Image 1 (spheres, rainbow, N blue to C red):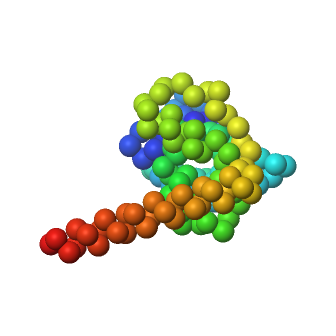
Image 2: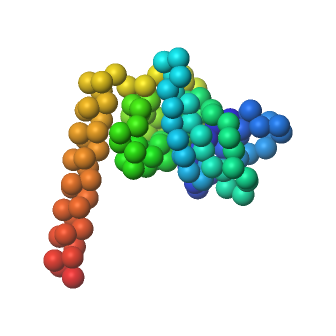
Image 3: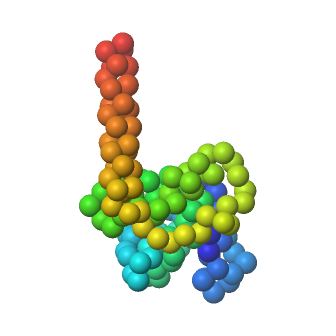
Length: 135
């Protein structure tokens, strides 16, 4: 399975019919097991899926992962390659098979990631306030 953002579909290789595409609706949970990260997700048009998938299966859905971590900052660390997944996605790259690590960020990288995330949210909030003042 390779998960994609809401606007596109994803192939779930661990599903019974490996040729079907599955569209990720939302990241529900992330857990760490044996130094690797795993994800539970909801799929558009499908019943609840109890399976846990390697987080690298969701590398083509970086914004859904970022949304999850924005809402759940106290959960386990984000994947170490999340910034690279985001860059590859935003650059429109088709091939990022080489970015398949399931390892979490180290503590220093995690702190930097959340600091940048908070700074981005502050800038966003300030831009909304500016727009409201204009209106």
